[in-house]
Amino acid sequence: KQEVTQIPAALSVPEGENLVLNCSFTDSAIYNLQWFRQDPGKGLTSLLLIQSSQREQTSGRLNASLDKSSGRSTLYIAASQPGDSATYLCAVTQGAQKLVFGQGTRLTINP
Amino acid sequence: GAGVSQSPSNKVTEKGKDVELRCDPISGHTALYWYRQSLGQGLEFLIYFQGNSAPDKSGLPSDRFSAERTGGSVSTLTIQRTQQEDSAVYLCASRPPGGAENTEAFFGQGTRLTVV
Image (tube, rainbow over all chains, first blue to last red; front, side):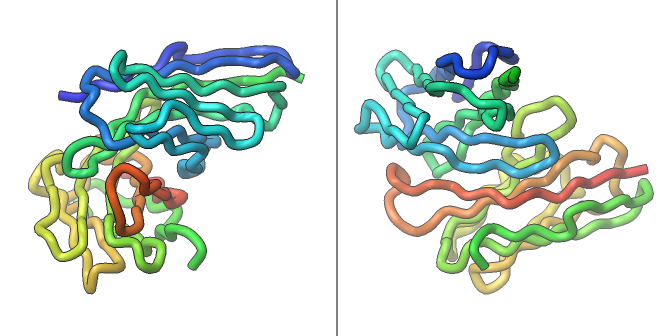
């Protein structure tokens, strides 16, 4: 059974810092990995999709990497801003196209 | 519409009543998912529809939960005889046709269900 783990569960950093969020998964037979952002009381916003054949994807200040063989992904956020405060979720798509989610990292950027 | 639309956004119901939650996926999306997010918990898979194939119901927690998708578009999640433990945010997502590898899932804003 696929298990997705996100570390840390919560992170608080001052504005302007670069930071890394971690995601690990136990079964490397995935189609892709997706990073989402969730604001309090809201749904999920897709940030980046990395296909299983890719190593990384970039969107603005965000860079996500994928090492499928070791079951790891990282989300790098450059020059963090208070507006980046949210919960970040990673999810893998596997057989039958189910998304399996981690528990999320609650990120707080302090002005 | 531009995104996945869910209604109602909030629902308060009395224990024992039935509720229906609606999801309008992005037009043309063939895959549709329902997830549940309980307070402080991760996202729990409930059910998955793909085109005209039989749905994957393996995540439904009990026989009080059912879902249908009419005409390959709108989906309704029904919870019968609601219990307090059913209180959660119910999220719907859709995915366009194409290979599983390169298609993103897009989520709605969710329906917050409170059973009192």
